[in-house]
Amino acid sequence: MNLIGLKIKNFLLAGLSFMAISLVACNGGDNNTPGQMANNASSDDNTLLGAGSTFVYPLFSKLFSEYNKVTGLRVNYQSIGSGGGILQLTNKTVDFGDSDAPLNEEQTQKIGAPVLHIPMCSGAVVLSYNLSSVTDTLKLTPDIIANIFLGKIKSWNDPQIAAANKGVTLPNTKIVVAHRSDGSGTTNIFTTYLSKVNAEWNTKPGAGSSINWPVGLGGKGNEGVAGLIKQTPGAIGYIELAYAAQNKMAFAKIQNKAGNFITPSVTTTSAAGNIQLPADAKVSLTNTDAADGYPISGFTWALIYKEQGYNNRSQDRSNKLVKLLWWNIHEGQKYCEGLNYAPLSPSAVAVAESILKSATYKGKPAM
Image 1: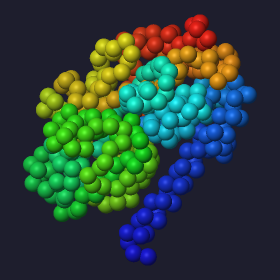
Image 2: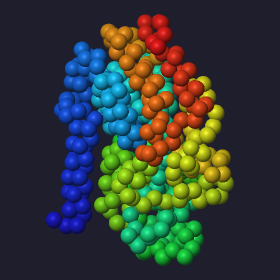
Image 3: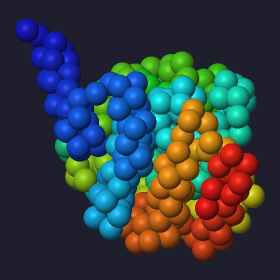
Image 4: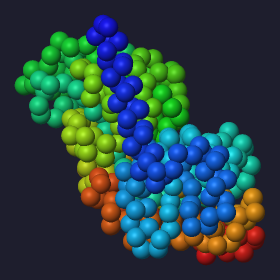
């Protein structure tokens, strides 16, 4: 088997192993399909079903474990990507979805009913890279990032990268771009950022949860992209900060709008998200004006139907869902920082409270 074939084989095996671990962790050992889980749980109001963002999965795993200790409620969350979570919410096979991008017009039309967006936290999307000879943090400007992902910068010792990293010996190694292959809110955050900072990107690939990538290899979920980066010398890709930190992966400092090179962290993500949210909480944090803010940051939202009395759902099930999300935005926030997520600001909590209080069960307040 040649080298490329061996890499692909190893990556697939690693991905399958990770997926198996994730499903056991999320499902408590259940091996059901989404439809089967929905049918099984419909008669069990002590198990709630969620699906969506891989961006928030490390935090949700912790939150739902802690909530189970306090209340006994089980939460079965599938880390399948924001697009998958929105689809399952549309099909009413889960109690809640989670997305790192608000519903777009097409998704809103397909879902056919008002959906609430409750912010859970904010996080950073980092540019992680695999360069064994570069031990210190790499510096990247907006144009460098765009040109790498457009396929215009092809090697790590390109003059444009060298100019931003004076004194760093860059290898003559081919750049291998890694990106998401599935519909992804992480992709939406990253491509929204690129569309704001680079005119060519905005005109051609554009922004969205799923786009036509000019170059690169696709991996499913943050896990898949992280796996590609780790196993491919010269690779660069975008993943959530928690995945990079937990896997001890290198990631770049990014030049923000103020011209400062910012290291992604809870502090710099919080700075980017320290804004007044609109009443519906749908806002982009990318390319922040904050001089100390990390520019590729974004909220993740739990998505629920505003009217909870659908599909013969019990009022008890509705109450448990709303109470879970209420706990997430209050007591649960203390778990954010330790997992490299930025807790909601007091003003963001107030907006989230107002949104949750608007949920109804058969026309009456769900709380």
